[in-house]
Image 1 (cartoon, helix red, strand yellow):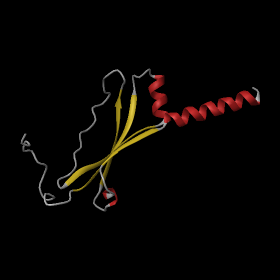
Image 2: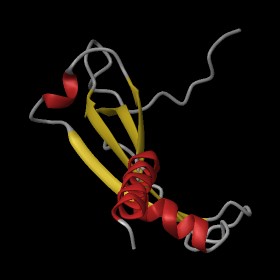
Image 3: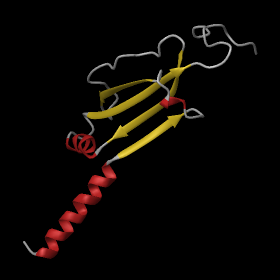
Length: 118
């Protein structure tokens, strides 16, 4: 193998690896996730591009007196490779979320189940 071909393969592999890593974050205002009472949870969801789940993910809720603050979705090169090799039959996805203490006068109440007036 020539040095030029080897260099091209290394560059292509590095580009594919970098392109395979992706994260996005949905976040509330402020910097409250660094508080001592913030709760971080994470789960890997095993699904597919064909509309079915290999395993039903657990539904975890924030504890009483806490609210959802940030959600982070992450996919890396190995997850992308697994998705491509299986033609979308197996698609792992890492999801992290943070729950933070409620602030304000309703901090001691649980979640409101009352319908909002229209």
